[in-house]
Length: 108
Image (cartoon, one colour):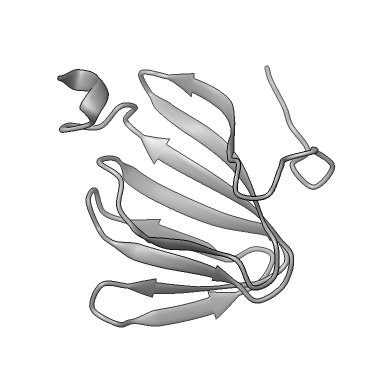
C-alpha cells in the first residue's frame, strides 16, 4: 500500500507532482494558488479531478461551468477540453486512466 496526504505536501505552484504511475493509471497532485489557472487543455486519458482543499471553477469547451470546494469530483472523457481556475488557494488530485492513453505522444 502507498498513501499520500496532498494537503501537507510541498507541491510547487504550477508544478504538478506525479504521485504514482503505471499502465493502469496516473495520480498527480496539483497546487493551484488563488487566481491561477490551468489554461484550456486536454489529455488523451479519461480524467478525474478532485478538489482536496480550496475552491475552483471548471469550464469545458462548450461553456458549461461548475464550481466547488473540497469533495468536488469532476470527470472528463478522453480529449475533452477544459480550463480550471482557482478561486481560492487549492490542492487538486488528478487521476488519469489508462496511462498513457491512446494517442499520447509517448506511444509514438
